Image 1 (cartoon, rainbow, N blue to C red):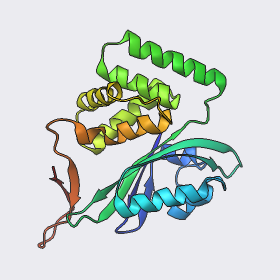
Image 2: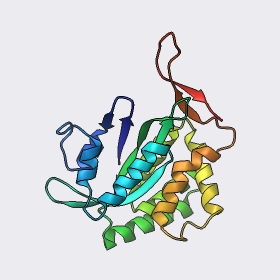
Image 3: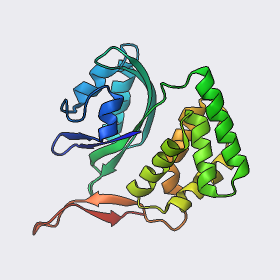
Length: 222
């Protein structure tokens, strides 16, 4: 799993080391840009990717998009792109951040093994974090470490305790039918928005510095 952050004010896109690898580059081999992201998309997926990105940048509303990319060595990779915007005090989106999961290794054998591991994880463990990990393993056909990384990223991004986030994810899963439609997209949406439903949590957003100077800072908005 790789993470990214796009500073819309300064037009700077940052990638984690892992994201360079997913797109087929050595770390810092290229300068990440929106155009680079779109150029890497499979031709049949590029228009949809551009539309989803534009909508998220304009509205700040979270997005989940499954698509194919083509690396510089012409390898086709299947990824799931999850992102959300951060707004300033005027309601303007100033940053977009999120993560990318490479699900290219989901051959029939890998899928079968991942599903079995996921089912065993959910059934055998009473820990809610382990159960949430199992749900992600099942939806994305990824290993336990990647699933934990997704949960941890959401927890840190939204300043919500990992256990509280996992409890909300499992509560949402029990209250819905994620198998109705696109499993991957449904589970991604629940993960992406779970922090908004955790009781007693103050959702954070970025506020601009005061007139006298200073730095952008988190404020409570709900």
